[in-house]
Length: 97
Image (cartoon, rainbow, N blue to C red; front, side, top):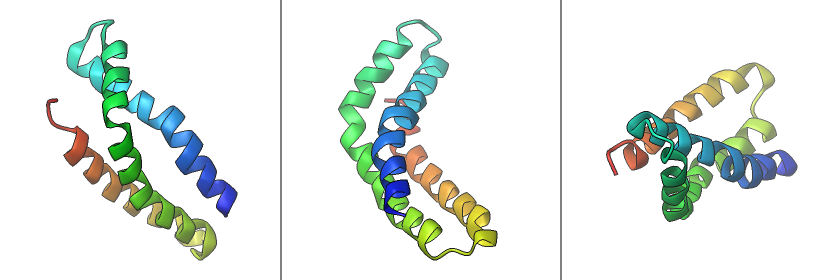
């Protein structure tokens, strides 16, 4: 359980999810090659708040998922948790910067 939680929260999200999120967001908004540079700059400015918000949702969420959630409820549980997290992400990063 702990290794899955650590892998998702401290490796996968900071190194994969957030950079891709920022690159896609900036590419859609700017539609230029400078989007990647601007995306990484914004990620550098916002990473601590983004990570904190992610950990607030996903650390307890993954603990429940992998620790106590029956296998047949994991997908509905993760879908609900993901929706909740996307709401947080939309509020904090969805507006024009």
